[in-house]
Image (tube, rainbow, N blue to C red; front, side):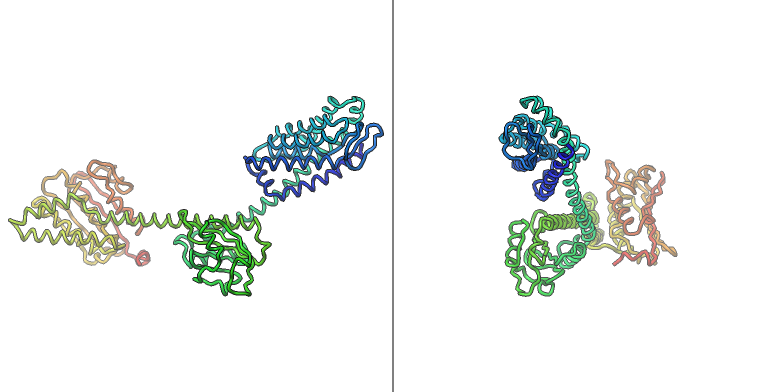
Length: 582
């Protein structure tokens, strides 16, 4: 019995070798990782594992129950002969890794094959092989994380079941009993151990592949982290060269190249002396990649390099996309055709996809920034329509009776509109310019609300050179006119104050209106206010720009009570705090 166990374990070594070869096939790796297999993959797996089981049958030992002798290899059997074999291993692994369809399918094919070999256990062994496929399928898990002890248990139980089936179906019963006593325990142990060894080989090989994939993923993440900033402004020559250098350094490639649709943007590595920036694309296969949007491989004959001494013998070309449109290619060059492997194909496919996503992110950021700038410019340029219409109506009413006043108002309105439009093209302005804008606006309102509105100015000439964002004061003044004096019929006083202090400039707009609630005063700096008369978006925008340019210390401050409201801010004019001005 011990000699039989040793011999069976030796034969298991053949099965383990086959298992190692099995891991080299791509379909097997896909089956190991995928949750769902398509019909073709199921059929391929069934045939492969069935062949695995058949090999286990042929590597078994002929057992003669009369003479109790063993033949070294299984062949056609006499009526008194059976086979001590490792067939169950292939079927168990099929069920554990492939699930019911693969396990049962492989079990049926290997079982039918065993039946054709004859012997008094032909039917019993054939049926037991099918049962092994069913039994192993019960332990199938979608994540394929099968434990080694589970493999031993299933392999041993499947073989024990086979012994029981032999006792139940094989005749004569005396020969069946003799056979089970002779080979039962060795086969149970050998197939349990064999199932463990096969699964261990598969796990080890795939673990090494996962480790290699993890290393590649780590490199890819480093590349992504380093290249993102360069690609924010699109696929330009400088960005392409920086990206190529990063990839070349991280992956130690022979050469890396990036092109747009017509020319080389960058080439780093071997052949850089003749694969130069801004040279037109020479290879037909690159044009095919751009046209088809599919990854291509090429050898020296297809590269069409104009330099006969070019050391680059092979290339993988992947398309670069932005918004679904092909905008260029990423190329990996190699010195040998042997480097055109699936690993390199998957690597460049992942990198090209990553770069394409980064380009799209960069474009999205640019679009967002443009939209943000457009929003601010729109806010800067806004002129309240009621103010414009009321001013024009006032001018019309003055033309006949007081043409001089009408002319003065037209000049003020012209200056006001001109200032509003010019503000859309400026990032910064001075308090002097802001004051002129406010004066134009207030002179129009003074004429409209004659004998109702009085404006007072307290201006320190030394403060007028201070820089601020355009249209900072006018929304504050407009807020006082529209809301502070809303319910006031007369004696409306507005004070505009600009004072220079040793380390700061104070700017305030104060009215003697009805004031506002403390809640509104606090909210006006944090977010637009929901109200029937307006949403405070202009003041919120002013506050936001002050924060961006000058920091928290420059935020709007609101002091309000029933006697009026004072909205002011303080600007530091220290030189180190003006570095943002260009």
